[in-house]
Length: 245
Image (cartoon, rainbow, N blue to C red; front, side, top):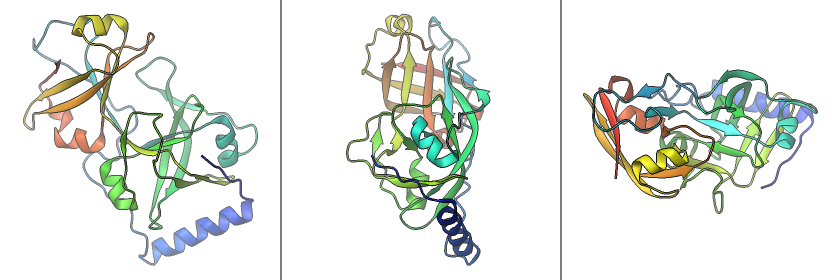
């Protein structure tokens, strides 16, 4: 991955160019499809009814909207030397949060998606997570990956108030997954890396296959699906949900 710090005049020129092209109709606004613009931590959807024996933690399914993870060095390129992520609100997992910092992403077709939120804390890599619909709009063939798996993935340009950043790789569509502690894995009789199914009951009920189990000793049970998947099952109308082998 490579990053480039640009001076303010260059950044302002890039932004003016993008805005001129957008106003001229050459850059369209990002599509508004259902819950595409949900915040990174919408209200948790919890399992209802008696679909299965209760796990150590309640089953929670969250829609993960488009977002960015950054290194501290890249954060300073985008927002200025010494900048720290400032918390907007906590996410479901302890220690993780949605920050107040927003960036604009610019795709290879010169289409932009503004106001993409950075999630904290900073990581040891910079990564952009988008939905399939976002990829089509931007003109990026998004690989379906587990977070952190960037080999052969495309790059993108990020614009912040202090600079522009070009990454050579790190743009992915996050593979649907479930975070589990050791107690959760014991309850479901699975191991890290196993595949499960997520059954959603309701007016648009469906079953998601190939849900990856992701172990961490400090997490609590939580499923992440992206906005396209959340729209497909109309998660807000779900009457029940269950994890099955």
